[in-house]
Amino acid sequence: MLTFEEKLTIITENFPELERKDVSLGRVNFHYPDSSYEHKNVVYHLHPNGNGFVYAGKMTGYDTNDKGMVNIRDFTRKALLSTIRKSILSLTPKESEQEMETEEEVWMNANTVTLTLLKEGDMYNVYADESLDGTFHSYKQAINYLEEEGFSRI
Image (cartoon, rainbow, N blue to C red; front, side):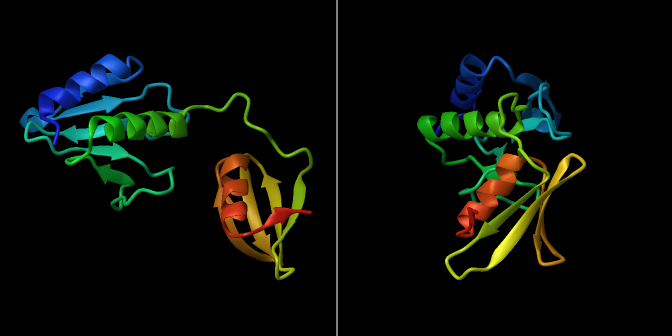
């Protein structure tokens, strides 16, 4: 397990885009001021005992708590670097993110079930017939969901 000091060094040396915020009980937060979302905390409550959290609420493959945080107590250097990098990327505005060419796309799975992806305002909604199946902040999030569920664009 990495110590508090080792984790601080890894974060400060590798992520200059994060701002350190000292909080109570000797804990430290690291904010990402360029976040395209209201959420700015990337590293949350890094404690002198080595415990702490990294925001993974917009990422898949992590066991998160109800606030979207993953516990980093036992992370290796490599895991810590990777998770923080992914967290920052998940909060970064995507200038080159592909947008829908039309306002509506139809997706189908192997069982010929169809879903409709609609751009409504600045959100992307997935509908099964007239029932809302999901709402996403970006086109990329919506297509990731559809692909993970076994759908492809027709």
